Amino acid sequence: MSQETIQRAIQKAKEQVMWGCRTMVDKGYALGTAGNISARVEGEPLFVITPSARPYLTMKPEDLAVGDMDGNVVSGPYKPSIEFSMHLGIYKERPEVNCIVHTHSKFATAVSAMDGVEKVPVIDIEGVVYLGGEILVAPFAPPGSGELAAHVRNTIGTNAGLLMASHGAIGTGLTMEDAMISSDNVERACEMYLAILGAGRQVRKLPEDYMEMAKKKSLVRRNVVL
Image (tube, rainbow, N blue to C red; front, top):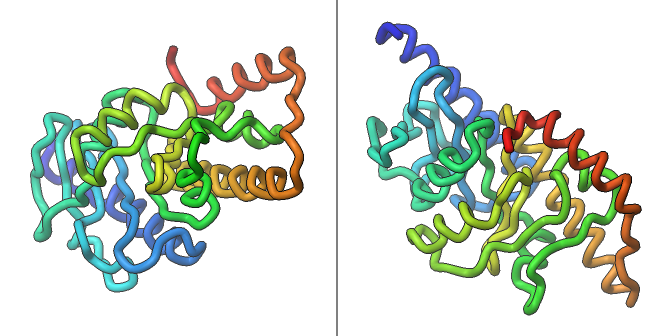
């Protein structure tokens, strides 16, 4: 690619990230500077990511950082998100993922902090269609640590959503809209899970044959290569 073409691709990725930031704040999934968002640069081994400790409400495209797949920060006026390595790990593990949204949404964070919960079971058909199945919980590690990045990379599997213990949620997708829909479905599933537990009941299991069929369709829909 020519430098002009690369810069256009970077700008497009920045626009996606900015849309994601605005949407995340509008949905109440992050307060202040919590959470982080990234997007691959089409056709290049690069990705754009939000900077560390910068408020979303005043963030501009030129504030965003650009990193490469070797873990280097290529450009940006500010230090990138402390979860830079976590985003990089997902991109390496899941080549079909183009966008990542990490939220501190209320219900997802509550479930992620529940002692003994290692996964959120599939509650309804949305959980299979959009997320690919149950939502796993990555073990706790300090935010921004290499240990957390490794836990996330080892836990996410082929699903579109994930919880991080006592931390929050991750949604992934082919586009930023898809990643936000994944985040929406993680939050929705966690809210329903808490409601079911609060009612003193258990989640009804969907039939195995339906689950198998729906999971296959979800993988195709999300371009997941096994």
